[in-house]
Length: 341
Image (cartoon, rainbow, N blue to C red; front, side):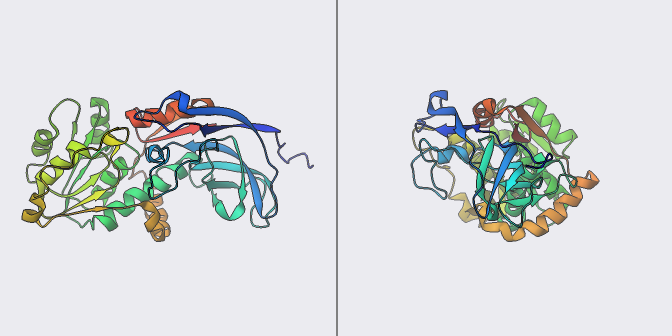
């Protein structure tokens, strides 16, 4: 083996789901274990993960319920977005030393088919950004605002979960594209300050310190044309109440009900959509990967110029992966939550 070829360890740590959570996930539902590191077969690569993503949607995969993505298999290593360095390759298109984005996170080492890896350039942007502002969460913001919400210059925009990885980007893109007013909700005064002073929102409020409907009415006295929903619950009902004629609502997530053990009540004012001719549409980022080249070009330029700001909450060590995930569900993060291995 050449001197510059990374050593392949015998084992690495990985997280597995061992029981399906009821309500809030508990540490006893998970196991961090040692597993053999497998050398790549034909057409495969072995990657040492450097950054791993934790995201709210993963809570849904912990349930056995049928959804848009398969549930995690009990006893098997969990999956998530990750960026790492190739330390062994059995594929002509990927070389040792390349950095790749893939979907085999929650583990230190991953062996998989090279066709499932996307090369990324650590010189163009920090590796962690390929999981956030230039990754899936960034594309979610871009596609949801520009395609699902059919955003147009002059629209007023409301974003819930606005200090999170998706929400913060939605508001800033809307401002860069000529929104007349951008309003965000967040879960702390510190996050509200971030939205106003760094991200350039026109108004923001702490949903934990007052009635959401009343605070939104004050922040958007002329109503809203578009609502990007990351929260659900009382935020969705308040947005419907403030929706202008031909208003649009995009449902990206509903973190307020992810750990509910009973069905969440629906908005009580849906009939208002008749009056406003409004529409509500759910979307998944996986349906919009055709926008990826346009997204990377446009948003990448904004990031490089400093026009679009981003924050990351970085947790150190795979042993803290679970706590980082639970932190996302609690709203502990500002911007994208990633785990640095």
